[in-house]
Amino acid sequence: MIVTLSDGCAGDLEAVMQVMTDAFGDRYGEAWTRSQCAGILPMSGVRFVLARDGDDQLVGFSLYRTIIDDAELLLLAVGPQAQRRGVGQSLIKHFVEDAKNRGASRIHLEVRDGNPAVRLYEAMGFVQSNRRRNYYRGRDGSKHDALTFMLSET
Ligand SMILES: CC(C)(COP(=O)(O)OP(=O)(O)OC[C@H]1O[C@@H](n2cnc3c(N)ncnc32)[C@H](O)[C@@H]1OP(=O)(O)O)[C@@H](O)C(=O)NCCC(=O)NCCS
Image 1 (cartoon, rainbow, N blue to C red):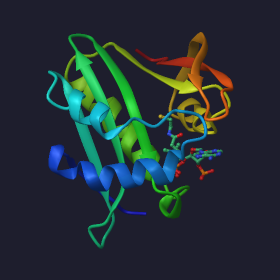
Image 2 (cartoon, rainbow, N blue to C red):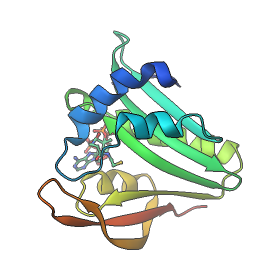
Image 3 (cartoon, rainbow, N blue to C red):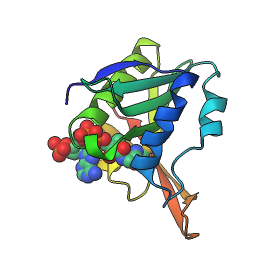
Image 4 (cartoon, protein in one colour):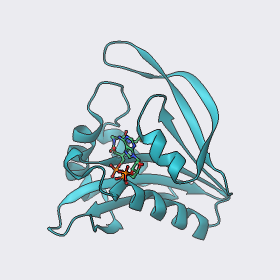
């Protein structure tokens, strides 16, 4: 799918929250709340990137933060109807290029152990570097590890 990427702002949060809810569900406690998103947007180095389809509909987004030489992908989501069509890959490529342009040499992210997104991150050159035990708490009280992935070429 051909998408257009652009910077988002607080005014886009309603549409973003819809994509977030549709993409993550509430099973594992990975999605952020609207107030968590609104709280981080004004912080320095935070970028919010929106992916829109040819009809200008929001189909996905990324949220990341670059501080000096460190860049972290905080959130990545693509609406279920647009998944497996290259949108996630476009958003990660943009994150990595932007992070490098801003001087980041440590490019990383965290993901729930068992999330199929791991395959996408590995395909994009990220390698697992750490495990945080019981980081996510599911709706049913189950606990899930977080895996840290670093871009290997940096
Ligand atoms: C993870 C996510 C962002 C991927 O977005 P996407 O647009 O579907 O990904 P892409 O189409 O760019 O995938 C590119 C490649 O990554 C791999 N991949 C992506 N999603 C995959 C999945 N669910 N299972 C297995 N491989 C997957 C595949 O190799 C895929 O290529 P292919 O479709 O030709 O086989 C999307 O599934 C999503 O929003 N999931 C819910 C939210 C989430 O878990 N976000 C990540 C944690 S922050």
